[in-house]
Length: 81
Image 1 (cartoon, rainbow, N blue to C red):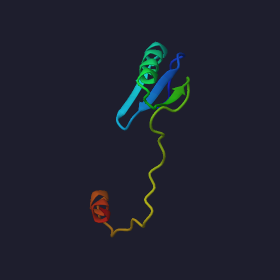
Image 2 (image 1 turned 60 degrees about the horizontal axis):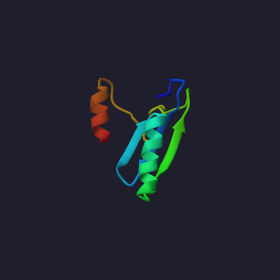
Image 3 (image 1 turned 60 degrees about the vertical axis):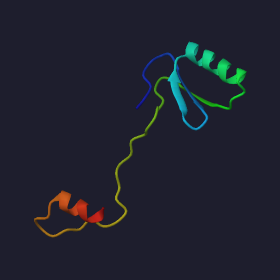
Image 4 (image 1 turned 120 degrees about the vertical axis):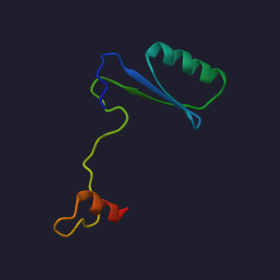
């Protein structure tokens, strides 16, 4: 996904489970609270056109996918799982 708005998107990760996307005003409040409580955090700022989240790539199977004539794709994939 690409961020499409003119305003930047702020991503904050603190601790093992706290992960948030927010706008600038929410970000400033949240960071002030983390600093007040002496919690560690990391921040990433996404600007318009940047990839946010997953980057899609082609699916490539590292082995050989060879089957007999008449074998369905699902039968072939069932064999590799």
